[in-house]
Image (cartoon, rainbow, N blue to C red):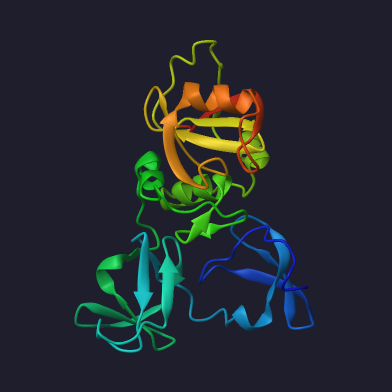
Length: 245
């Protein structure tokens, strides 16, 4: 419980958390979505009710004090954040806590974006942030988890957990042939997603951003050790293909 402690993950607005202990202004809590446990500022916690009704479907949207885009924003909400809408006010949604969000940036909780690669591509250029899960910054497994969540697919938080839990194994061919859009490629400590047969999108510490590059180039660089923290190590360990539906 220390503001200088390392960031392991982030909780987005509206995510449910179970609190086990309160100490020194921090809550020791577990996120319902992926089971992650850690400390977060106690002041970040709010009531369980009313339950969220919508999620943010835009890459990022602003929270306003009134239904007026000229008013100073109270903050920003990232894709996947959950809000409880109380009513419509013109083109805005009034939230139960009194803030206003552009209604066109929201979607019902059960709305899905089935093309996970397209969702990941929306984060192109977002800075790399170890432990990040938002459009302000995210890490490799945060990008994958967020893209899958938008498609209604629950995924663990860390890359090794994702490798063990998601999809079905695809043989790693010497020439890297036979890959499909949406396939997940795993190294030790790193994961990326295929955009097509040859190109990979991944949040990584080499580019310090979400970047697209040929898988063969990424493989050669990572295997050769020409990389930095947050970009994996060694040869490709596994390729996982998400199951239909």
